[in-house]
Length: 389
Image (cartoon, rainbow, N blue to C red; front, side):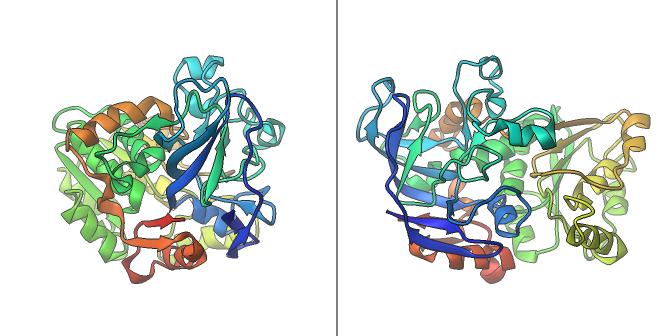
């Protein structure tokens, strides 16, 4: 089969690889009909995630048709259309029983690698390094789905792939980020980053009762989408002093909660941005947490910092004093997608949201390397790339 493979830093290639096979009676094989390039895939592309190997099949946002299944997969039938959540979860460990699926204790066979960095291992993830399981990803014609009796959700025929594909990751991720803010009626939420997760965080914050959402980015086309499609007020951080602007827009209090939808490859103009870029280039710092620092300092006292952006390691100049002395709460985590798929599917069916609004580019799987390059360089007003095999 064809699959998009990581061949080195900023080097993706669509190659012929072996077809996946059933390895466990809880497995299913999915013929992929739609898959997508995620913002966190760019961290692989740019070499920020360790333990990638040449030839690894990438991609963790995908859906398709069940073409084969193990004997223990009784919840699915051959021919079912399904969306596959990016966290691989067994459904029976202590974390899964708490619905903390991204912390599954049984799905990462290489947990010892993650433990060296994180203390304990999170779950396995499709197409996202050997440290997180070494599982082949979904930017391919077919994929093996472990624990298929727990993860995939069946999709009704009346909904298109584009309406439901993002249940695999970015819609639940934006929702969980907004949910973590414990939004009360009248709240103002600030969102750093107007990529796909940021867009869904904005829409989710409104669905959860926020009165105002203020979105921060530097690309006008992404800010325009945040205004026109997600309903946010917007700030361009290259044109204004964001903390000062937020203070003024909120009557001197600051936003009630702040969402970091940027993560490890944050950008900032001037000396602060240069500091982080130099340190990461010299491997003296793992991530560039410019959005996280700013969110902490901008949030009102007693507020919540919700971190949806991916961070991989250690950061510098972290304002812990602000957190302690101003009673801030930080909430984060890889998304527990299985917890949210069914309720969010109901919202799609009820026409509360059509998640396809973030799609700007549609390509064939063969064009995946071009899609990565366009997405990375922010060319052609690219926000979200969907691939079809």
